[in-house]
Length: 459
Image (cartoon, rainbow, N blue to C red; front, side):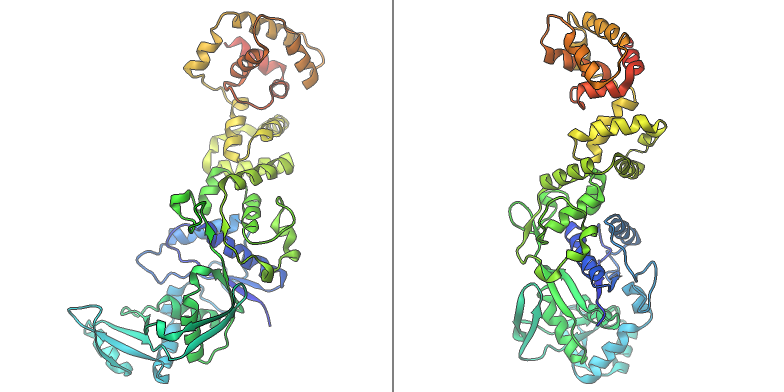
């Protein structure tokens, strides 16, 4: 049996980190099994769905290094891959009629004065069409069978639900659009999905879907419901805990490999913390994922990002920075005319930062003239500062052997009646306009003698 896994987001907002993790685990499983990963857009909620949301989700998935073999943008053997397009083709109508003809579903006519009151149930397709043509509200409702529903969940084990806890459910709305629990069954069956991998918030939907599978006499896929990602208070991660959308982390300056690295740790037991999940596909085991909820740690994802920033080559770092700057700070793309200088700047700046956003703030003074705030200006006007900067400039100009070591020795050899840490802070402000910078000696070395002298003379 070919492994076929789908990720089926609703385009009603941004891609949530929980959805991204589900997609990642499904993608890793499909790729290891040499199977297919399918992207399907579940957009039957026409009031809330939007093309902009769909495009954003697709862009975020690609940023997460997740690709697909079939989908709305590339097509495939079992398309279309948007539910609204499948509605237009009448795909769901076929199986609605079949369920009604089998006696597993029925039409329900609702009261004109009370939209929740059913006034008649019937099985005639022609009668339903007549009512609808006269503006009446008619739905298709699934008849929940008596007994119990059983299934095996890869994460949870054997599951049992008493059908008496469920009421008959609407599977097609009065506008003809299928509801989630019906559409997902039809789509998964026709697209030959072998494994349904999703968050455990869908667990109670599964028995309803299995009832429909059985009513149509279709083979069940395997199910896996991944534990939810929690906030620090151990409730489902939401906006009240902080940002939850993938595009926030992109904007914040998290690198994609670091992002999926951190998501992988939320359930995948790996014997290291900093790694590239794509390089570990062969060691991924869907069946050994943790069944315990994971707490999202905003500080930990920053730390992991910082590790990747320092671990990758400076060329890779610059490529990632350029991709980030393109949408966040496009003026920074002008920094790379002198690539050797840029590499040196980024190499020293990355040692103290954990995001591309902070890297931008650290690197900017090396490329642009930074305006001093009033506090910094007052510091440079203190007694003795002018004398110190003059001595420093002369010493730097006469330095023949330009190295980090010679810069450090020159600075330490300057004798002036002022604490050395204060002198170093003054130089940070004078040269880079900031109190917090990369290592001072390394910064002076990278700036180069000419830039250092020019910046001192401008004060």
